[in-house]
Image (cartoon, rainbow, N blue to C red; front, side):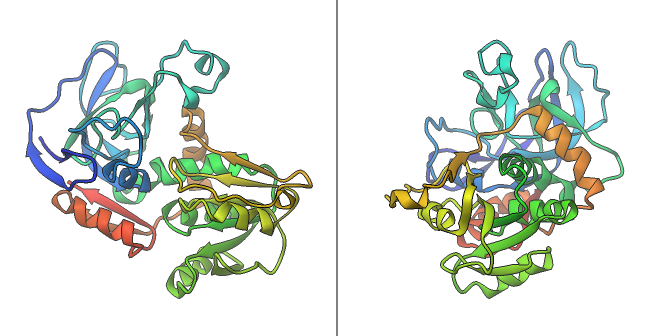
Amino acid sequence: MHAMVLQRAGGRLAMEERPDPAPGPGQIRVRVEACGVCRTDLHVVDGELPDIRPPIVPGHEIVGRIEAAGEGVRLPLGARVGVAWLGHACGHCPYCLSARENLCDEPVFTGYTRDGGFATHTIADAAFSFPLGDGLDPVATAPLLCAGLIGWRSLKAAGEAQAIGIYGFGAAAHIISQVCHWQGRRVFAFTRPGDAEAQRFARSFGAEWAGGSDETPPASLDAAILFAPVGALVPQALAAVRKGGRVVCGGIHMSDIPSFPYRLLWEERSVASVANLTRADGEEFLEIAPRARVRTTTTRYPLDKANEALDDLRSGRLEGAAVLVP
């Protein structure tokens, strides 16, 4: 197999040839057809997450086929599956026992604490893999495995909000805005100030208004979802939501939130974070996505161009999602 490997935090990925990995009990070896490039991969590569232990293969938006299976696996060889960020949960901590496996005390994360999908092959737990249909496009589907899933969990955290502000209009936003439109919600998109192309992109996916993050939307928001990892957006979003509104931080990493006056939080506004996802989230969203006719905008890169894909994501040169195709 071949893999793009991070040898040190903050470094560049390097191509390595390795023996094909052997699946253990309950595990599958997946031949990767496509792997999305997520902002969380940037946080891993750039050393912004704690306890990174190189060498590690990033990537957790994986679509592929089962090539080998360990003892106890019932999924058939050749079946197409999706592999997401939460690679394993212990099943016995208080969080797992209360249907909150996303907060597991002993988790395994694909592409962070276990090698991921920036490779031709990867190992995954069968119980944490999502069966996918043979007729789908692997490249178009890959971004659903994180951008879509975390977007869905963030939208659920926003409750019944009808007017929703989305800060940072990239992979997750362009997916979940389509779900909002399907559900009859109103979307107001916030981009980097002056980014006319991103604002056009947002409007093409149903946003009724798109402007810079420094602008005031034309209507008060019921809730806001922050996909941009910029802590300074939290008080700006609080200022934009109406009384009782909620600001949901949808990323795994964010720059520090600056101090702000209590009046922005008063009147029962709240700030919440979304951490990881559960398998139930995945099952719900993968059932909803085709009903909502979600379409993804993707840019393909060969596996050996993973560094270029990360660079394009980091600099904001992408519309939608980058996807590696081994």
